[in-house]
Image 1 (spheres, rainbow, N blue to C red):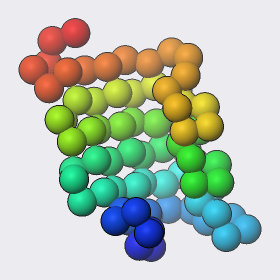
Image 2 (image 1 turned 90 degrees about the horizontal axis):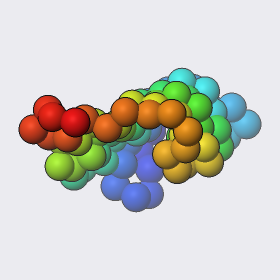
Image 3 (image 1 turned 60 degrees about the horizontal axis):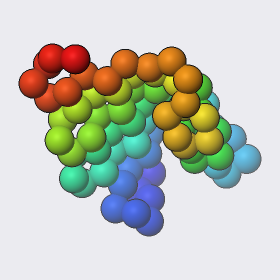
Length: 77
C-alpha cells in the first residue's frame, strides 16, 4: 500500500489502520519492520535509517522507548 509520505507499507491492516506486523519503506532507504498500532511503530521493531544505522528494540507510539540496541553503520557500538 502506498502512503502519502512517499512510503510503502506491507503488512496487516485492521479497521483501516496499519495494525499488527508490517514493514514501512521510504524512498530515502529508511525501513522499519515490526509491530504497528494505528500506523505507528509500537512494540518490538527493527529500524534502519538512511545512514544505515540499525536500531532493534522497543517502540511506544512511534518513538524509541525502553530497551533497544543501536548498531552504527561502522558496526561498532
